[in-house]
Amino acid sequence: MEPTDLVAMHMSDGIVNAPTSIVFGVVAVLGLAVCVARARRDLDDRTAPMAGLVAAFVFAVQMLNFPILPGVSGHLLGGALCAILVGPYVGAICVSIVLLLQALLFADGGLSALGTNITNMALIGTFVGYGVAVAMRRIALRSRGGLVATAFVAAWVNTVVASLGFVLEYAIGGQGLALGTVVALMTGFHALIGIGEGVITALTVGAVASVRPDLVYLTRSATPTLQFKEARA
Amino acid sequence: MNGPGSGRAPLSACSRQRSVSRLPLAFYAGFLVVALLLAGVVSYAASSSPDGLDAVTQTGCELDEAGEPVGGQCIAQNAGEHATANSPLADYAVGGGEGTVGIAGVIGVLVTLVVAGGLFWVLRRRGSRDDTPSRVE
Image 1 (cartoon, each protein chain N blue to C red):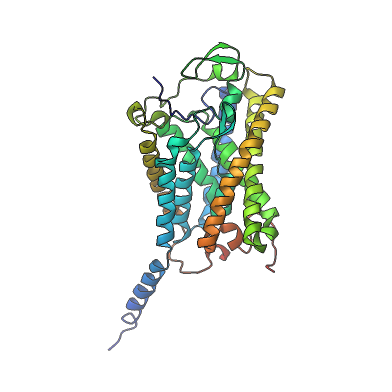
Image 2 (cartoon, each protein chain N blue to C red):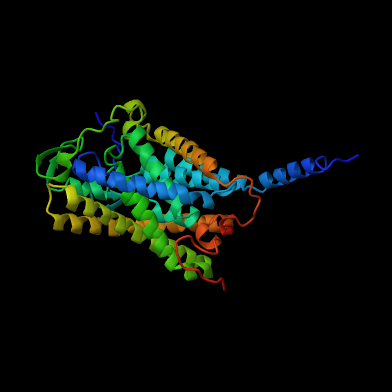
């Protein structure tokens, strides 16, 4: 007997074949190893508790499926949100911990699918979202509205590109539906889900920036870790 | 009378205390309360429709009342039973009980905070009293 408030969200075991799961498991482990090594410089007495709270917040918001079409819902992935608040390396670890606990404790997302789910939502989602946010950083620094707009756009792109991660994995090791149909449905659904992701990310980043602007990584760090050495105006 | 160390100990204790009191504890508490309310209360209003990914993997199949594919052809037919399906918190219900999603959510938020916060606390740079941590290389 399934509870009516069932929320199943991420890729299950067997959606892609074993070799594909293993390959992306290795990708996830290598990516996270880099993140752990680089996260240290972004963590101190003040940002470490913030990062723990951001992970807990992403866990909470991922439970909140919102309707996008009749019979279809979506939920936050969280990559851009984490990257903007705590940086991409710490952020990718935040999303990964959420995915790990969901799979271990809540039977949400298969254990053998952890590699694909972490690759898509934690690595691709976070770093793509951060890349967009850094590209828009000049706008984000200009005003609160600019920061909120940046958060929205970064989150929308992070959702759509993360869904393309699934398309790639399915193309390599999945079966059951024509690839063209998978591409069309995944991008179509996630273009809509991305609007919700964008709104949630914009609201959250805007709220944090209004109370504690010093806890927003994107606008605090003078030199973002990835690229773009840019003098502050 | 004063040795070189006697003047320094209280100073460093004092600056340590100031550094702790400069932590945004009220903000942390507010952030946690918001997360707990979302997971513990707002989660009851969440849509129970399949998400975008599940909707794609179920395309082409007829589903039974539990959402399991029973006919047709779709990606979800390849999915196996979840390895932790018997977890006491499986499917965001405590012991499989109906209406317990909020309790499961609160547990999840607290466990995530402890695991992630604990890891980040261990990984952090120690002893920095710098006001501009992210700029330090």
